[in-house]
Image (cartoon, rainbow, N blue to C red; front, top):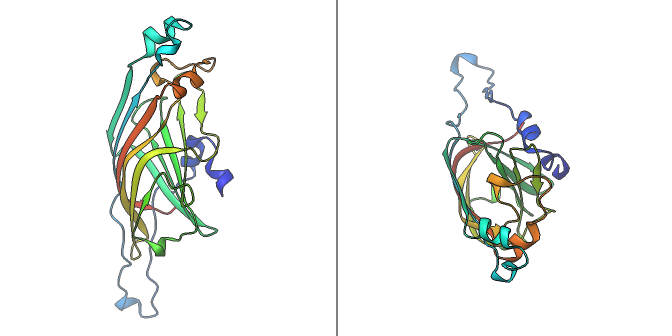
Length: 218
């Protein structure tokens, strides 16, 4: 399942069912009661990229230092995040992709280890790699994509989840998620070689996300 989730995000979301048919089956059809149905999925997404270039690069890379140091890139959207969850092999995986920008979509794949939805509600530290694996990526205007090499190191963040068994949906929030960054989205091109310097200088991405009624991918 993990290999499927790590394909380019736009292919992942093409697999997402757009609606769920929930039918209650009773021998006495006249007395059938409709199964509980979840409300619409709702999301609020906020992201701030903070770009830093350490002073030690000022002389050797003056153009990079002058153009990039102190830059920020922000995205804020409401109900523009594609999202679903899967449950398999004693893991719950939630995949988010913000689609509010054309050809510049950040995404997260969050795996909760040794856990089923029936063990929710729960609150997790995003920094605890023994419990949570967070992979991330970004698409760019030139058609290229950046992917984290497996579980990324989180610098901060709290994840809170609740599960509604009656409607089989997950709701919750991701607060103050923070991790190192190797690119500046507005100017990134595939040939860029500045990634290591940006991350080493402390460039970072910060995300806050609230979500309601995330549905299971069928």
